[in-house]
Length: 174
Image (cartoon, rainbow, N blue to C red; front, side, top):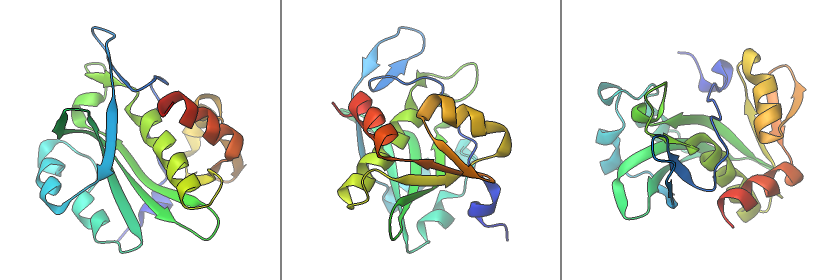
């Protein structure tokens, strides 16, 4: 079985917005982030177009999975993130936008940036000064440096330190 850590994340930060934004109208929608529940799993299956097996991810005891939804519409999941609190930082295992938020016909932009900003906020809440790390696909290293302010630590290891974390948090959670 291939471990997620060895694959590397390949989410694209399409746009840094103040929440999430309707691609067609440009309207902005406030979001909320909550823990993914077992009853939510039927909404985020491979049959529904999601790439990752979130049911398997939920079984990992050290990981917490969070969903992002639009305020007032909690049954439509816009994206998911899997986080693990480590000794001195938070590690992002998986980040995925909903199938309808990917590609040329996506409905909303800003979902990945919003989820990463949440990971930074979560890190502060856990006493880790906003420090977040993740493994990147090699071809996206420069993308994460440019869009998120991440630091390339070597190999495929990416780090968001306090300064970059605060910028993302200020944008999404002001």
